[in-house]
Image 1: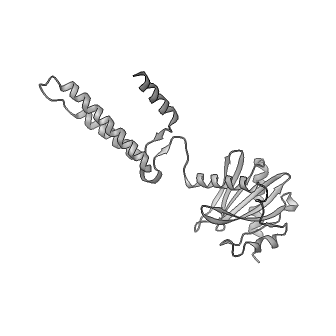
Image 2: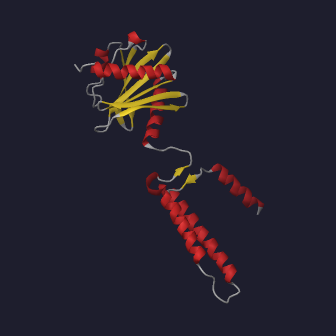
Image 3: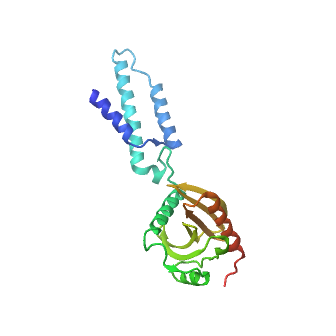
Length: 232
């Protein structure tokens, strides 16, 4: 008996805790309500033991339903660990951090090395389905280093590389959903700051270990210059 208790405790500590969706919780409550309304057989001494067995059986039914729902993902991911975020945005930020860290490996940062935006922008022709607006921010303390082709969500995206002193800034951009517009959104993951905004049909993500005020300044400069830079 003691071994079973210890095993159960170890499993509860090792396994993630899942939060059932409202529909599943309502179903479990309804099963319990139905059981409470059941009347024990009249005039039988075995009524209480029988009710106890029925209750245990119902518990197993509810538990089995929860396990099956968890194994099936409850409709492709409705059932989620408590405190976790598995939204597309969360997955995107994880991919972006991975891309940034990968770019810092020797030989992975740049595909085209140039401080001239007129050299960097044409390089993306035929490699992505956008012509990224490349701005020159060297006079603001954010020199352009070049560009790179990266992949997020199984699609090619443009990566523009800037620098602030010893800090590398990856600016990744790709087409946004139709008519999508969004203000600046900040995410911090594993010591990296990510700033996200959507404008003029483009999704932007700036990623760096640069301090927040300077990265936000960089993002605002990109937005201002992108709006003023005419397409050639």
